[in-house]
Image 1 (tube, rainbow, N blue to C red):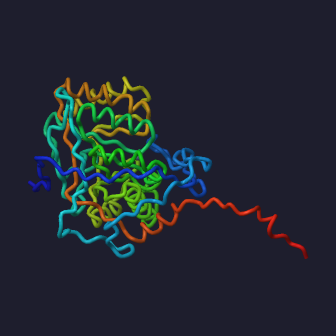
Image 2 (image 1 turned 120 degrees about the vertical axis):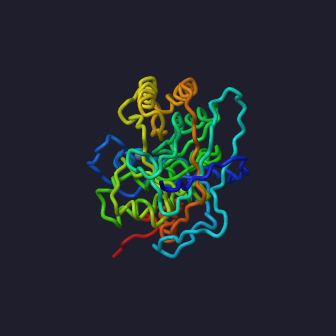
Length: 353
Ligand SMILES: [Zn+2]
């Protein structure tokens, strides 16, 4: 039997939370991309771009935060493994004021060296959950209102989850991303713009992965967990090998809430609980982008508690280094558009001859 690379973590963690920076937006994405692929009904790039903040939104108040000690590798070179020093993601240890809370029953720490796969629907390497144990995961944020609602519901029951934000969304709503981090959840990544990577060239797919990592790290203002989830769970062997090179764990799922099609909180909870009853345990996939999903979380947690289920939190042993060339490209793209206070060009410069 293969030796599990997990350590059970006990004790408390030092709270090291980046001070919240002011909200910062950039002005909309460059040209809208189109995608006809919506194989699983999940988000497409096109739908992401339609949600881009409009250019008349609040002006940028400050430049993007600088990320220290993150970009460690030369351009495009895979990051070597085996960090010499502890580089665990900074984790806030939230105070739990609810004595009847569901709570986290145990926290597992994952050594992502070699890119292990988690979630039995695709990866069967590590069956680490005991009967009755669940892991809560939320994809496709950060998003205003819905992500904070999910955070409030998790906080009320003193549980932690793993979030897989989308790069573009993080650049639009960095303050929400910071709330997720401040609440002590693990934050991985879910690409730059939620493309189906299996349909892309290797370079395009790599760019989607790394641009997402660099953008979310930049917006977070601190290194992330080396956790990744493929959009629509679409992958191939080459991409999985790339994650392995980068020492990033690939997260699949065990229980799909199917909140991309079940748009009712009550039905969503019932569906998850029914699947859980059959499987007995597993990594649950939800999306903090959807209002019905956010609305379902309080009741889902109540039913998990009533059903005797235990919430396991997953954290990473090490942080995820970004690649400097992608950091630079993202930072350059996200520079706020300077509002010119010059007079209209025709008032100043005229063709006279
Ligand atoms: Zn997704």
